[in-house]
Image (cartoon, rainbow, N blue to C red; front, side, top):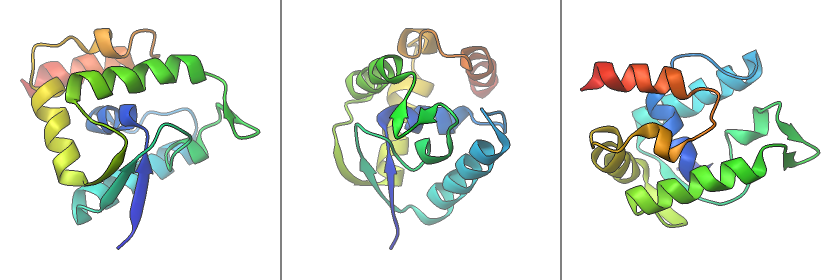
Length: 130
């Protein structure tokens, strides 16, 4: 079984993904990852470095994220709010934690992902989910 590597904040991003992204390659890659996650309940390794989503991001330059400090905050917030630690999980377990502890909760997404350029899209989608 394929193992997918994800940063903690990408667990939340994939919940609100509607086809917008940094580039066409990024969008195709993220869409492919989401399909694998939702169809197969694969093993997911939560990591604190570049993951399978990052590999197609134009903000990854010479193996380094140009927004690394901001991304580290998003990752830490997801770990704190959803109690997700680095390690290996089945995807559905992680998704349920994100849904229960963040998406369906009263926590404001902007408190987790402050300064994210996609926050308005996420907030609009979340309103429709409730």
